[in-house]
Image 1 (cartoon, rainbow, N blue to C red):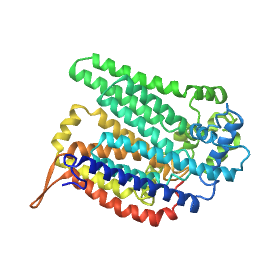
Image 2: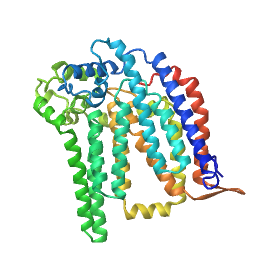
Image 3: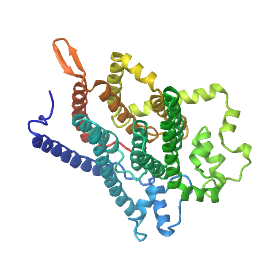
Length: 448
């Protein structure tokens, strides 16, 4: 059973239908994004958009300008290539929205290529439409760095994921460069770099101890070194400038100071008011927000409350967001059912090589906790969406691996489990894409 014609019987018809479906999807995507840009995203000073427009203008005026260490330079650099200093900010805002939509269409197309090269046709179509209409459509018309960051960080994740199964210098180089580009887009990749380094080295050592063969471990350690060197080399001009001006290579007001405040008002009062974006703030060290000062001045109960409150708030943000939340649970529920059904196989795989799975758990859990922690400063859907692409990709890969050719017995009916999941997702997509295209996108502000 298949929604599309059999590849063996009429491959040309199958691909013609897929091409037509994708063309219709692109047309609908662009049309709805333009309408959201025109009707909803009308204030360039909302959610940092004006700041990115100003950043691009500064870059045009001074090609060596690299910013005040709040927002990163990659996205403003792209905008600066289209900025005419004679046009008003309002006029450029309208142009920048078109640029952002164009970037988003390219990003979705390239994501589709990754999905089609990795998964079966039906799974790839579902993932492409899910990501396009339930995440990127709502961000397309906004002059922000998130779309580019989500894409680059996912490609970095994909490259590093490949290294666990097929270590090679080429994938390592790609992963390191992509991590660097993602960091230059938004300064949020360092926890991911740390997670990869710790668990990749641990995996190499685990396998060496079990097999008593150290040569593969040495190769994997060399591969990890290539990742780190490529990452540092990519960002070095920027962090060198940070060291010269601010005294620290990885200085960023958000991760250096603001994350250790209890509110945005406190962040403004404690460091922003003292020039944290033009140099190291002139404040005694014991008064600066920092990890040591935070844990010294807060009780374990206060810290735990912030973590639990943040986790609860993030879940609420996802429930009220663009519409991807129910489909995540469909994938999660199906995967849990597969794990329970095939628990012996899952346990054998985990006990034989636990580090890749533990790395994923650490990555998703760690970023979720950090996102919830930061919602006390600035709340919004973009805080958690950096996890979406890696998470949905992991769910799809796991369900495909565990249930790809498994037959489920439903009474007298015998069906392929993965096909059942894909049909469920496809039906949900058809219904909800209609609803979001006719109702939600016409009034939902996607920039937060």
